[in-house]
Length: 93
Image (cartoon, rainbow, N blue to C red; front, top):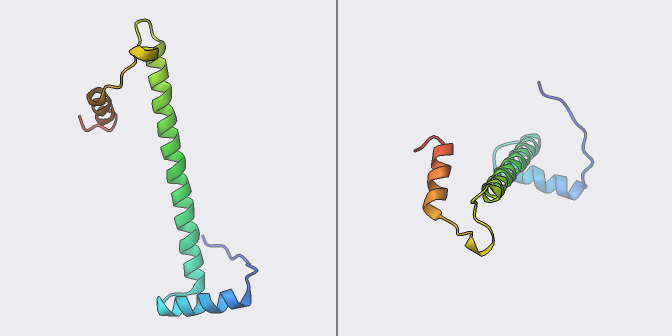
């Protein structure tokens, strides 16, 4: 269901937006709607990426805190093991 909103916008900017919309064969309304949709999707994707990284960091910290886990200078990044773990999580391995 769509809802109407009211925006306060500078007249000169609105005129330029109307010209741009006409050049794109669309409306200012559609341009605003698409802009908001794109921004919300981008922000949501950024939050998901941040959560994924946080989960990865927590997993690494938990692994290091296990008895026999690597700490300090003994901790070495194993690229192949990391790759395999990510691929397993994504169901690709």
